[in-house]
Picture (cartoon, rainbow, N blue to C red):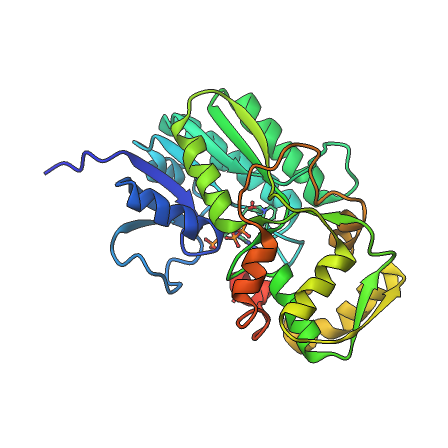
Length: 306
Ligand SMILES: NC(=O)c1ccc[n+]([C@@H]2O[C@H](COP(=O)([O-])OP(=O)(O)OC[C@H]3O[C@@H](n4cnc5c(N)ncnc54)[C@H](OP(=O)(O)O)[C@@H]3O)[C@@H](O)[C@H]2O)c1
């Protein structure tokens, strides 16, 4: 018998944001296929999610994977240059995926970008994201572009690892003044925004940001207090902060934060000028999750490169 459910494709259903979105789509009785580079990663969906390879060297296969889908939810990106995975290749790969969606007859693309992307930015994360947004707008596909800041949730990296460092080290180094802003959004709220955007028709670009804005130092102090840690907070030159994190990287087996990420944070790029689109208060979530936050280090390298 033919499966008559609305068919939608999600990149990274076994990873972070894509997992929360996939839960919602399955609950809404959608037929879901994921395109992923990690088909064997442990996941909760049993045989409810079809699996296709994230292989940009074979556009014809991507087109086959996308054919018949009404919506492509695209979360694909890289956090930093590492080996062959670079921002430049991520832009090219994204273009291949967008073109494949067009050729497959996908109706709409819901794309996760970043707050404050800019073609002129000297930070390749932000200029690369802006190039991908332009490729989507130019593609002729119906689109919704969601621009998150920092996404918090049980599997997130930045918030969890701040707690991990606060729990283990007597000193917590704040790059620069610590007075720059950050406006985190809950992963469930991003998933809800994405699901809703998939069901709409018109073209849309919105910041995906939560209701609370913190100064970075205030945020780290709140996290430390919530997990019962009392490190001494010191202000250091951003270059020194980065070099220290570079030295600690091999110990945790990760690139902890890049120079560009520190720069973006300090340039107030993780905050929006628009109204909040997410509902969940970070402070409520922090209070409810303090017992588990930062108990283990979350490694980007382990997640995506092993
Ligand atoms: N997390 C945040 O705080 C945050 C903040 C702002 C914007 N965003 C944006 O939101 C989107 C989703 O973020 P997320 O943290 O939820 O991402 P994620 O689930 O960790 O990864 C999303 C997708 O990108 C692929 N991917 C990640 N790193 C890769 C690499 N090095 N090489 C090849 N493929 C790679 C994953 O492939 P697999 O399926 O193989 O895992 C997955 O399909 C991204 O576009 C990100 O830029 C995230």
